[in-house]
Amino acid sequence: MLSVYFLAHFHWFLPRQQWSLLNRFRTEQGQCGACRRKWRLTDTDLSPCGETQTMSHIVECCPLAGLNGGLSQLRSEDGDAVSWLTSYGS
Figure 1 (tube, helix red, strand yellow):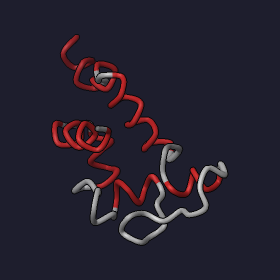
Figure 2 (cartoon, helix red, strand yellow; figure 1 turned 90 degrees about the vertical axis):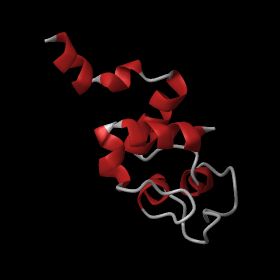
Figure 3 (cartoon, one colour; figure 1 turned 180 degrees about the horizontal axis):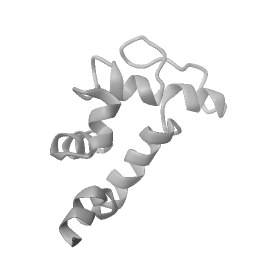
């Protein structure tokens, strides 16, 4: 029973940086252009690719940083998603 619990909730065992970033993408509140503009930390909300940078844009459709499979892939928390979180967060 422990192994099923572990597989269902392995995000609890992620390093803090990846866990925080995962939750920022899930809640769409993080260090993206749209949030920084809303918080008046910057004048622009554009991504380096030229589109409005939201947390969902970063993970879903940004040609420079997007995750193949998007937010549903990220929510699955499989090895590819964890690798992407690690590379994106560094």
